[in-house]
Image (tube, rainbow, N blue to C red; front, top):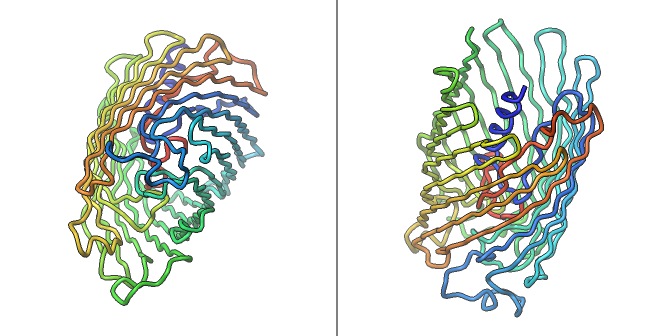
Length: 444
């Protein structure tokens, strides 16, 4: 039983480091029997370069707040709840969270963030299954890609559905539909409000030993309802994505596996002469468990991405990431990650018409230590360093973050088992990958 919980904890650490950014990390998945779970947390973080500015520029020079400072201490108080219920073969899952973010020096940035999600995981007969749901997010827009140094809150809505038809024990057909909307609450950023519709069709194959292979085609159309029409050459940032992908999950041994995808992306701006892209994309993660309490993941990728609060300015992202998670004891977890990325901006940017396209190199490292002194209590300590160099001087910066988080978890369901119910999670990263988009807000 102990090794089972250790494996779950390691998976949670690696998953959050690879895909999440939250100073107070998201709660790990509930286990069967946990009807409702509540979590309270308090985080204190020091950010050495809150506005992501070059060393020779002071925040007060660009911010409308004359008292703006480069570094700050941020206090976040968070509450979350999630639950799941089964009705025959139907599952319903819900989650909600709210965060109060308070800045010691830059108090004009104080805000309330949060998220919510509800999903119905349905099954029909013996061949059909899928999901129907929606989600909501609210967070402070980041400053990596914008020189608007003031409070701007980004709200996102997402409505999604999936369906899967099991043709044979090994073959399946699947489809997805998603509509996403994003809106800024500041007038000067509302030109970046967006609406996006995505449709996916695919087929998958499951081998007798549990490996998975699949093909998919995805089409996404994104528009900006508040944009100001430009001249004929740059009339609109509206774009259409078409992607063909091959996906796989393959286990070489019990302790080594490969997960990834390879495909081709076409992006077209129907009403602009800039930004079109066509080329191969891929990502691959190699997982290795040299010991029962250690997990190593190496990831490489070449993908087309965009920051969530600046959808039209996409970039090619190429990089390598190494993640190590270690569980030295029953109550301690250590995680470490280093990454090296290169961003080649090719999105709709009329400024690039008169100067070289933006090129960024991003190197980061982060480490996390989690200690669980009690069955319902966990303490997270984290440090992150990020260095971005760019051919656009205004986007060249260094940043350091240090945080400490106290988490309390309360369960309504079966009782805690041996103090293992508060599973440790990694809690810091300088960026977040969300629905194939980057969000640069460390408190998102």
